[in-house]
Image (cartoon, rainbow, N blue to C red; front, side, top):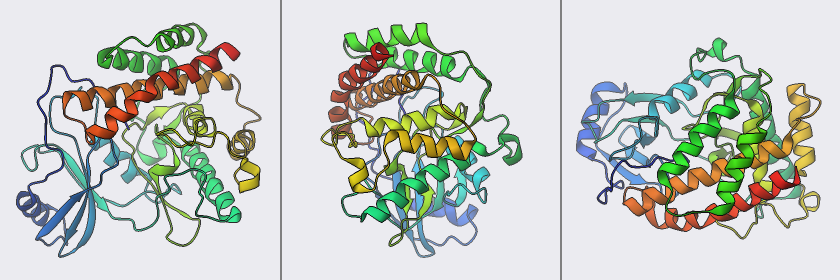
Length: 353
């Protein structure tokens, strides 16, 4: 997920439809082996870049596009998504094959890219109720291993040395998401204001670590093998950049603290060891071992920061839904109810720290 704030009130926009004739014509001319005609169907769960299943005479594909409408300049960067996944091909980080990028808005109304369709399973509940204990353990280990593999990659070695600005990652991210939150604010959330104030005064000094970070690393942004607990592809790289590895691991660990009853299903209230799911401490320790760290200092800050960041993201999703150009407006409005909940969770961590 990512957020943007429109610069003006937008009229409702149709993000569910593609010009299938124009798209087929362009793909036949530019993508080797592609043959139309095609049919498209929008996946209904995303809140940022609308994503479509494309079924054509030459096979099945997936298309991700920028939403139409007036957007912030840095938002919905499908070109960056395409670039980072293409760079990671063969790196040990599971990604889908990137087929082609189109930056010509005239084809379907906004930039898009086409990638392979990876058949498999997406799990929406982190408690994994449909799996055995052994498979739950393996799924979590697959996620942990892939994240460490991503963070161990030298960005220059895969052509991504200019994919972001190194250094002061949390300070820069704090400014970015504070600005985005203020731009999409629809009312006062006192806990969010207090959390922003605390974070501004408690950011740890930069330690110089730089890695490729995913930015939205969580279970439901992954495709697993249809029968085995094997990770096949990490999806939704819209927020990826050069940043600090602690950002991704602490972001994912929010899931251990969120309620399973909320719109963001978490692991709060579950006996994780009884389910074969590692505790937060064990998951972080496994990651640290793979990375060669002894520990992650200032852990409560990184968790509090990510509750703030997710609240800012969701505020933008809600604002887009209210303005009429969200990918799934009804869900976007429902998600918006979590902003004060997330702000309170982050503030509780801050006060505990």
